[in-house]
Length: 328
Ligand SMILES: NC(=O)c1ccc[n+]([C@@H]2O[C@H](COP(=O)([O-])OP(=O)(O)OC[C@H]3O[C@@H](n4cnc5c(N)ncnc54)[C@H](O)[C@@H]3O)[C@@H](O)[C@H]2O)c1
Image (cartoon, rainbow, N blue to C red):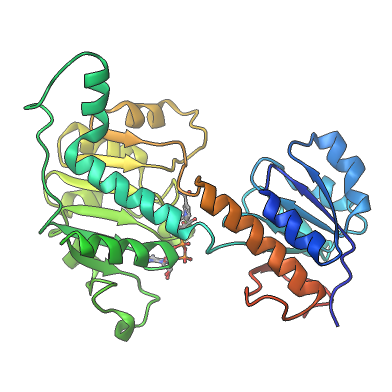
C-alpha cells in the first residue's frame, strides 16, 4: 500500500520535469517559482508534499502549518534549508536527491584543477584588460602529477576516474570504502600521512561533519609539498580558511580553487581575503549548477514521490533523510 499524496507544492524554480512526472501519475501539482514566507504558510496546509531547492526555508513554523504534510523533498543533496529535527518531530519525512548532481560537481572539480594548472582565469582576465602576458601565465601540465582525492563517494570516484585519464597519478583516501574496492579508477589507496608529502593537487569530496571540520589545516599544510594546490568543491569548513590564507601568503600552498566557503554568501572579511588572494580561483557554489543537474534533481524527487504513492514504479531508490511515516 502506497502513501496517499494527492497534491504537491513545488517551489524554488525546480525544473518542469518534476511536475510533469507527478501529474502523469495523477498527482496534482502547484508550482510557485518564488514564494514568500507568508504565502508558503498560507499554501502549505493544502498539500501532502513540498518540493524545495535551496531558497525556501522549511522551518518549524512551516512544518507546523503543514497540517497535511507527509513529505518534504529537497531537489538537491544537502538539507541545510530544512529543519529536519522539527520534521522528524512532526512525523514529516524528508527525502533528497544525493546522486543527481555528482557528475556536475565532478566536472567542475576537473575544470578547476586544469584552470589552476594553466592560470586560465587570470590569463583570460588580463587579456580582456588589454594585456598580452604569455610568460607570466606559463603553467604546468597535470600529466604525471599526483592528485590526492579525499573522499571517494559519488563525486570523488568520478573525479579519480576522469583525472586518471589525464595521466595524473591518482592516490586516494576514504576510510569507509573497503580496501578491495580500490582499483584503477579509484586510485591507489594510501593513508593521509603518506598522501600529504607526495600530493601536487589535493581535492576534497567528503561531507562536513564534526570529524571533518578543519580537516585541512596548518598541521596538514606543513606536511605537504611546497606549492601544493588544493581544490574544494565539497563543503566550506573542510579547510580552515585562516590556515589556508597564511599558507597561501607564505607560498606553502601554491594555489587554491574553492567553490564552497565557511559561510555562504561570504560575510567574513577573512573569507574575502582568501577569495581575493591572487592564487585563489573562487566560484559561488556552482558545483551543482548545470542544466542537467537541475533537471535530474527534480526528476529524482518526483520519481521518489511517485514510488511512495505507487511503490516500484521507478528504479530510483528512496533517499530518506528522516523517516516517512506510513512507509516504515
Ligand atoms: N559544490 C557543490 O555544489 C557540491 C555538489 C555536490 C556535492 N557537494 C559536496 O561534495 C561532497 C561529496 O559529495 P558526494 O555526493 O560524493 O557524497 P557521498 O556521500 O557520496 O561521498 C562522501 C564520501 O566521503 C567519505 N568520507 C566521510 N568521511 C571521510 C573522511 N574523514 N575522510 C575521507 N573520506 C570521508 C565517505 O565515506 C563517502 O565515500 C559532499 O560534502 C557534498 O555536500 C558539493
